[in-house]
Image (cartoon, rainbow, N blue to C red):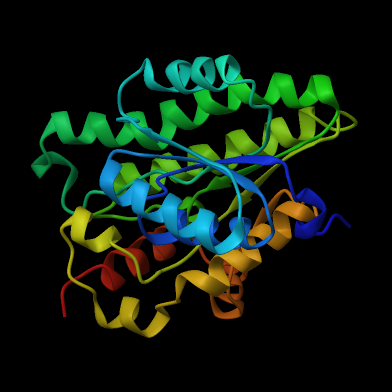
Length: 265
């Protein structure tokens, strides 16, 4: 199996790298000597992270401040890196967010922005960078989905559906890419201590507090699965057991349970 240290000196892209899982992905990759392209909207936070990682690990970085909900952003990122002569070996599509509430109560403009980031940008980034990886017969793609990909989640209806799309899409193209030297792994985290709830507008429920996981072990498990070229992974034993149990649960019941666990305390 490939070790993270084997990728020393190669380039990785991390989207949504200004906080949360994205920042932790950047830190773990940098510690292995992997050069980084950090992408997010908040330029100051990206620059601070890049500066810290360069000083700590002696890596090279590129900071791209961009709005990933805009349709032209993925092409802009790809063109800029091509112009700089950077060959990307690892693509981590981490950027994404959810919106909490009834589907009919959420403003359509926000809903569309979420779907553009969570679906369209993931597909476009994958489509742009994978052919170059396949031409070099080497590459790793890591898509960040959610345990919500496995079940309909009332009050996160579009978000869970978007993550189900990412999981299905990524498992399918991972199969298509067999024999190319390129793999696509989807990680499906549960509740992680990040800024997700600040953006979604939901306060933590008792269930979410019970299941809360820190970013570091989640990212470590996700990277290990990527290096092993697994199709998917659910970080955390409790999360994995919960998802396994859904195989035995009628969909109407899992939907009702998901709704209950998202209710305010």
